[in-house]
Image 1 (tube, rainbow, N blue to C red):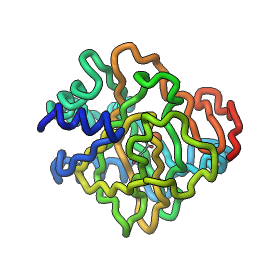
Image 2 (image 1 turned 90 degrees about the vertical axis):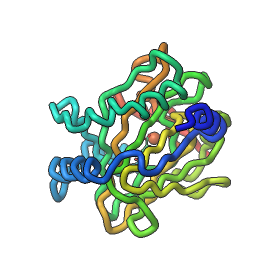
Image 3 (image 1 turned 135 degrees about the vertical axis):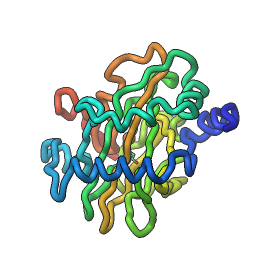
Length: 235
Ligand SMILES: O=C(O)CCC(=O)C(=O)O
Ligand SMILES: [Fe+2]
């Protein structure tokens, strides 16, 4: 991998997508664990008001906190670590991975920034791995506005309407997407398939704990730790 080229691309666009980073057997194995964990009809864990206002249908799971060490290999992957150092510098730290699961026919995620863009250098890095294909047929593509991590606050407005300049990413099984926490991004509605992403979040040295506690949506800012809307936004 040409890490300095990837770093340049990341700084310019706010994301990089790399295909075929992880192999099929490993992805099939993790996908099987994810399906086994959630079963046929998992319940939502966020409260109804959040799901409704944030137009977000995801059910999180932290497998490493429950002793599922099958997810450790990706975290330790040499290429992934070198790429992370290229983007975040030395002494970055990683969090336990979070699986985000969406049921067939659910709405995905509305436009958001994972953290408020108050300090350009203070952000979370999403390192997203996909254990099965996401495409036109399954829905659930990732929409991003390239360069928007440098454009400040996501403008208030319709939570899920198309944004000018948006690009749709269709990660295949084994794809890695590195996504800047300030980039304007969303997940399109899911069609007749289940959808899962595995996020190995990381941040540069010195980034405050809980950097992703406040999420910016087009209609509100939401604090997860207290489960409250801390700002209403109108377009
Ligand atoms: O599941 C995805 O593809 C993207 C999820 C997301 O918004 C994030 O990781 O911050
Ligand atoms: Fe996000």
